[in-house]
Image (cartoon, rainbow, N blue to C red; front, side):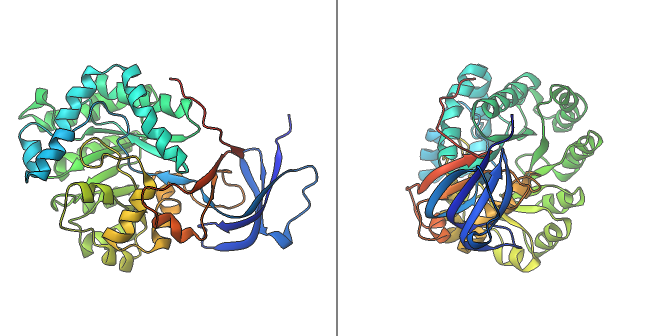
Length: 408
């Protein structure tokens, strides 16, 4: 059957494309799941037989991209949050056997069905805000079987929801109890055995590592990156969140898609990110929930010309939330991003952080017809509201979503 032609008229377009900027009044033509044309409404080409959608002057942006989440998990770590309120640090809790390892115990005890059921509402909340592309990391299993379990659930969520899911293997999240005192052996097992096995099941789109003094060092990261490169997989890094052990400088040498957190990065890291084209992903919800004092070097990143993305970091420990709009607001107030930087950070630059920039993140002919219609007076409102979702409609592959009930 021929692909449906649709006209979306009477719109104000925030394209997030530097070549097009904002267009008002504007219109889009979509054919099937692609944008065929967009521009000023007065220049609209003939669209005979098109299904017409009058958007009533509403603002339209690309669909949002959440480029850093740990969305698949079991249980909560509310007790640890209460401990931090009483003065214990994230690092102290982790060294005492809590933190990531607490989530590991919960995930290992959960079935795939239970993980799906607990994770689906979080993805539904993000979809309701206009997120149609998302990264989901593993990292709470720390055995081959349990990491595979998490990644299978992430793939199942991508089938059940109208969302593009990119999976990232984060087995190098922390050292599991079974490998106590054998961190090098753990990294070697991931690189030599786990990664090829998971690749054979088509469960992995990228590889990540927590490069930190309470996790893994740069030599271990390099061994993992070498294995990923041999398999043709892109790499990412949790870098400079709690200290600076040289993670970003290593990751950029390997052309990492992104380095994330970056509170302890400096001028050298900013310059390296810009040179490599590696996206700096800012995670303000974690900064807020951990009551961190040191902010990412936004001025240095901006001056160097590094691409800035913003993500929810949805996870049970440091960022217990599922709202990319809240992350945008926090990024402007806590980190000093402009409203425009925040919007580009959840669209164009976030898509680049997932390797999706050719398909998503901007409104342009040939790209996926994924966009959001907003009940706002200007795009600046998207980083302004707190606890209010002004999304009017989400369009995915040229179809207005109707919020289906997902099943695994």
